Length: 146
Image 1: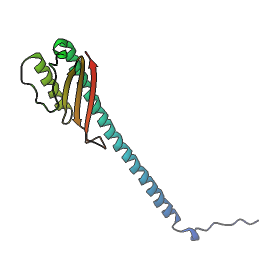
Image 2 (image 1 turned 120 degrees about the horizontal axis):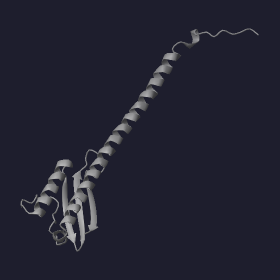
Image 3 (image 1 turned 90 degrees about the vertical axis):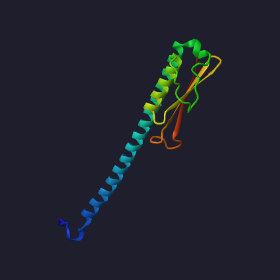
Image 4 (image 1 turned 180 degrees about the horizontal axis):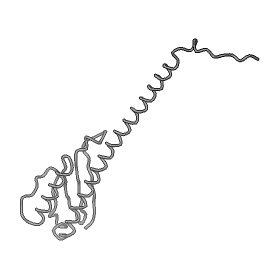
C-alpha cells in the first residue's frame, strides 16, 4: 500500500484562524477573571467596613459598662445625626470621641445609642457606596443588657 503524502497547499490560512480564535477565547477568560477580582475587592472592602462598625459598637458598650449607673439611666443616649457633645464630663467625652472615631474611620460614619430599661441598643451607620450593589447606607445594630 503506497503512503499518501499530506499537502499543505489545500490547508493555507487555517493555522492563523485557529490562533485568532484561541486568542479570542483566552481574552474573554481574562476579562472574566478581572471581573471576579473587582467583585472580590468590593466585597472585601465592604466586609472591612462592617468589621470597623462592629468594633466601634462594642467599644462604646465597653465604655458604658465602665460607667454602668449612668448608662442604665440613659446618660449615653444619642441619636443619629446628632452633633457631638461639647461638655467635659466623662459621658460627654466618651460620646464625642466615639462619634469622632466613627466619622474618621467609616465614610459618613455616624452612631446612635438608645436605652430602654436595661437594654442598650447601639446603631452604627455608614455609606457603603463603593462596596454595595443595593442601598449605599449600611447599618449595624447591636442590643445588649448591661
